[in-house]
Amino acid sequence: MRPTQRLTSHHGGLLVVDLQDKLLGLIPERDAVVASTAALIQGARALRMPVWATEQYPRGLGPTTAAIAELIPERPAKTSFHCCTVPQLVEQLYGRNIRHVTVVGIEAHVCIAQTALELLDLGFRVQVPADAVASRRRIDWEFALRRLEQAGAVVSTAESALFEWTERADRPEFKAISEIVKSMSGPRGDPERTPS
Image (tube, rainbow, N blue to C red; front, side):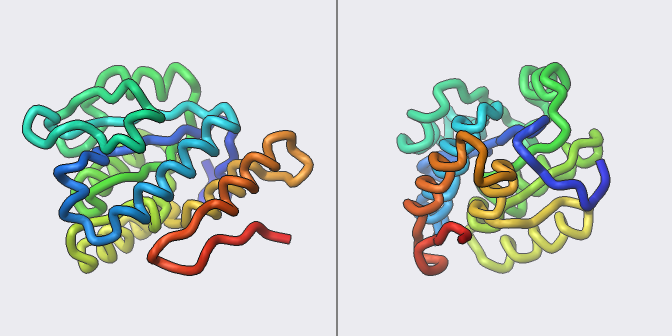
């Protein structure tokens, strides 16, 4: 893919990484990250994009937080930090002809960064919405996003990802996406607004 190619819903997928309560309890922006992730899951589903999720060592770190778990019932476990060791994930990415993956979850500087780098190395285009990833410390979040951008990932926001996936205001799914965006708000800024 060209670096300037838009990341529409065609040939795209969403990967939710390790949003588990024991980890989230350490994240200052947890509520905003969970809200942004839930909005992206709802948007991806409205646009008929595939959605995957993983859990990091759930025996020790517990399950995915309930708000996300109810949206994604199947969440394979992993012990590696990046998600590409989950065989069914990689098989489905290739089997569904996915070309770009939006990666969300925690922590930005560990599992998100390593997953994004691995996906880039495998030839996928990667998008990381800054308001849907987090780390315990802001410096780790900030430098993870810098590194990923330098490596070729697209750093965006949840709202920009939703509208880029949608492409057009006359698309049948636009109303649902617009409602999802209108409902978004959080501690990182003012309530989101739809474009005019």
